[in-house]
Length: 408
Ligand code: PLP
Image (tube, rainbow, N blue to C red; front, top):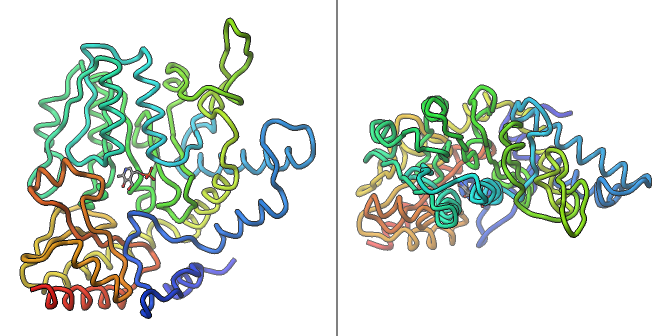
């Protein structure tokens, strides 16, 4: 297999990077929303449909067994990706949103009670806020929110002061999609577990950039979204610690998640199938496993080094723009830079630079409470992947400067 030691070899793996947008070569800096896909991922999915498709776990015929072996092979790949102890702990989902909803819904069915507290932070994505609000409403538990400091870090003093034996569940983002802050999740997890809480880590933005070891983090749940880590849309993993998954009730009911069904009583299947009702997205799981192999081929050292260089180069170049205000200036950041420019609206800047072929995200980034905390409507966010280059950063910064000139 070809080495991926140069940026041009890496870029060759991503056909979409050759596309033109508005007659300009695409500069794709919206990777935190969704990254692009390498050929190996696209080919794995297409080859599955061309040669191997059948339903899984159900048939005794050849294709069904092949598809089942491939699907369970993908589970083993994701177990290794997260360093989980067992494939029983790897539940395929459609992404982080489904992973969090699975846990929140399950816990709201008799596990969480009035008097319990669910703890989140001000920097959570809506998908790590709303499911817990719903769980709180249905269970009678209370939602407790930890403050964020002005530079965009979790206020650890506030965290420790709000943590107590009432805290049943802490759900915290590993890397903030809006600020890029890397949170000290291992330390936070240790503190929460010391008071007997379960911990969910939202890894949507960390899995693409940081090596994950769920046993080292010692968390009870970890969620990721395949489409943010070079994998397909509709793919994701919820890691759950085996003893905890055995303790909590299922999420969706249906085929596959049962052992026996009568109209009087249903018994549930063993892990992980207890949490995988219905036909899964088999091709997406295979694509996700291929994305995991792709990341392993690159190695997180190379990913981290390339992206850190891009982040610091972009921060320096953007810093030359008069009136720029960075939102989120924590010392440890990964993947994304958020900013505003005095006298301009983020969406106007985004629209103009799109005309020049540059794709960034503007708006509240599904973190409205965080934007409210900073007293802003939203930001411009540039987010990086391993295939981005300094030349692309130059094109982006030049485009932003042009937009500012037009708008001021
Ligand atoms: N959590 C974070 C931090 C995110 O950035 C996102 C998506 O942007 C999500 C959760 C939701 O992920 P998905 O839409 O893939 O379910």
